[in-house]
Image (cartoon, rainbow, N blue to C red; front, side):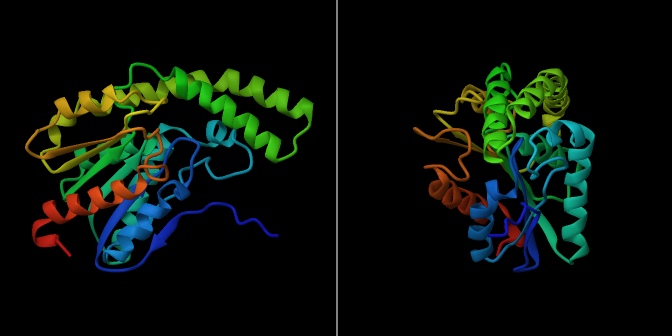
Length: 253
């Protein structure tokens, strides 16, 4: 059976578009279900594949991806949608993607609203993200039937490169959260109560930095980090739909 590598998703449905940004080490498959749901509501949806992601070697995230490239990917995603004669009315991001979704809202006032899922902007540390990376690296190498020597080499390379990568993510988080006051538009925050990668308190801290009259905070009991696909995903879809319906005004479908 031929395996098709993950790629950017474009669901061409209507004149109003939502951009969805995936997680660190993830792919647009993270947000495919939400994208399909929004398409059924009449929105076009675009979910770009971040640089370095979606390959059969997880180290490509460290070799070929970085903050500058992922921000460029975000800007190119917005430009792609507009080049297809769509109006970007919202941008949402999951985990890593939430950093760039928030940044897009800070710098682009033409986007009516947006939000984040499992957002690390106010995470105390990324220790659990580091552990998760190494665990996922083992899983990927095992699935690729890599040799013992290759697996060991990948672990060493990750130990060398990952600290700087996570430091850069932390620095970008600080830069983005320092400009949160520039977001004076509806903002959605979704977070799993049982998130082990980004503590749920990060969501509450983010909420406290935004206009409470324009910000919706949804906490999903017993749900973990990736709320776009786990036990919370159906409620999340409904909540996002209601958020869009309530806040798009003249752009409402």
